[in-house]
Image (cartoon, rainbow, N blue to C red; front, side, top):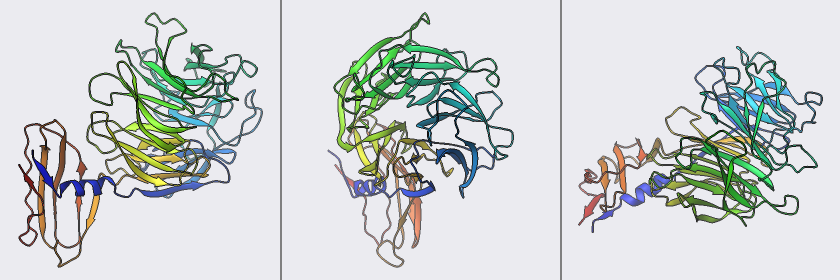
Length: 454
């Protein structure tokens, strides 16, 4: 059995490297959602968030604030709160730029003008009959080549005519003049409790996208505490068939589909954001597997390849600043290692996006009760290793190509690294190939630090 000396500590150090925290803005009240794009076409990522009674565009990299909309009564049948509960982006009018869609007792959209910084964006209603819309995501539900909006209606019959339901909303032919969008209720009354976030993707391989959801429970939200997905009907009829994945799941909030173990079957990654724990359901039978049962209130979730190794990782953060923001490194087989991003940072919305254009995905967080928007800079793409001049590491070089250390198709890879007496830049990238071999060529005052033994 081959043993690798000294390499694993180095890789572990890189994986545990510090994620630098950058503050976009701070507010008087809660900030529940933040989205990002380059609206002024300057090559820098901008952020839109709703806070303190308004929707604001923050232009990067200095985060200058531009107010897009002030919340006020009279624009729909529902009185708005001081901030959206969730938001997303969509090119609603097909003019090539990203419009803003928010949920603030009413689902609405703001039209991005040709000059995105020139004053308020035009407010229009999407749907003010559905209520308790905790999540907004986009996807081409009916496969017509156009994006649709997926939104839950999580309130009871006393509050809305579409109670305990999930909907997808089709953009009308002329969204600028339409009073509302075309509503399709695919989960009619069978999504009880406090339904939270939805996921989108073809789960059963029939070519039709399906939709998942999770719901918290308790006295105020009877019938909750479940994870489920709804199978789209082949004939287009409503409602869709519900598949319960698990019940008796206190605080269930988030569930997203992806092939997590590389077996060509869709799995689900999930969190209990009003309870504790992250978990996954292994497809096609969707066996529940606990990953980290101890993390507290992991309310937000995103799936992405955070270490550029070709598989899907996960990132989440505690709802309130009581625990951690963390990403879960996938080894490609559905085995996850917890990596801390930050501590004492709240989040209602966490998104993986390249905020600094360096080729890796960073983490954008709307801080909820932390009353801020922050982003954590991913250190895994370009990591600096410091050492002293004239010392043990004065002149060195090593090379580690793709390698299967134990002939089990699990592969480590690290780009060539070299240095003299200041610092070097390396790439922490995991790659695996069964036919490759480990080669290490250090020149450190005649000492071979990195080697293998059979």
